[in-house]
Every structure is written in C-alpha cells, then in structure tokens.
Length: 209
Image (cartoon, rainbow, N blue to C red):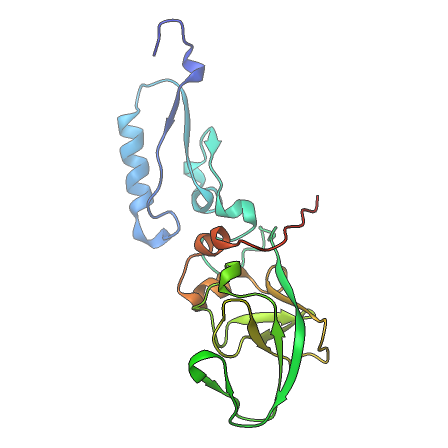
C-alpha cells in the first residue's frame, strides 16, 4: 500500500472451494483460516460466492461475488424458490411424425419406440451448445407441458416426444427456463450448469428488461 492510499481502498478476499457442499466442513475451515490470517488488518472483506451468499450467513462480509445465482440457478442443484431463472433456451417443432412400435430414433439407434409415438423435430443441437450427452429422457417442455428428448442429440436437431402435448408443428419447446430447471438438464448430461450456460452459441439472443 502506498503511503497516500486510504485503508478504505483495501479489500481482503478469498474464494471457497466447497461452499456448494455444505456437509464437507471445508467452508468453515476456510473462514477460520481467513479470520486468523486477517486479524488486526483493516479494510473491507469479500468472501461469499453464490452458495455462501445463500447458505453461509457468516461469510456475508462487505462484498459478495454472486455468479450462478445471478442466472437464478441454485448452486446446490434442484430449485431454490428464492431464485428466478433469467435465461430460457427455446426452439420450435418444425417437423412431426407418428412412428410405429419398435422404430429406431437418432444416431446409433439407441432408442426404439415401445408403442405408436408422436415425435417432433426441433431446430437445436450440440452445435448450438445444447449438451450432446443430455439425450434420451432429458426433460423439455412442449407448449408448457413437460415431455422428454428421445434418441441422441444431433448437431442441429433434437427429437422430442409429443404425446404430452396436443400441439405439433410450430409448438414452442423449452429446453430450460421457467418450466425446465437447468439443474435437471445438467444432471442428465453429467455436467455443471456453468458448462451448459457458457456453451450456448449460434442462438438468437432476445433481451427482456
């Protein structure tokens, strides 16, 4: 610190390794080590990431550094009623078919219909950033009604089950947002929500105040 600088300009900070794993005890250990190291030092403090802001009151010092919570996503998985998702990824059904029982769908023929099934094609795929590993059984919402992906995610297209909806061509399909929580998608894909959010590309972004 230069002699002319004020202590108000100094910020002491650390970053938690396991704040999203409350049972680990690591956050409490880090807090204790931080407070011991900074004892007697003047200046403001910044410690809490999203998980600590939500779940560790003693870590809420002068400044917080929210990340995932800014998107309205719980860092603990599932849904947190205190948070509202701010991003929706949607597409529309541009093709519809009725497939007979034991019809294969998608690359690798990893999914076969077990009965007569209405399916829809939507214009989104892993080239747009949707995770390829979130294939069969990854949740979607067709016109606000929960359904699922069937078959593998392709580069530019995804096949969705339309049985839960009476709509077909032109129906909106939400991949995550108000109905489908992105934590559900990340669990199926074996990823963290951050990875998925950072991968979105080629999509048209519409900003709503």
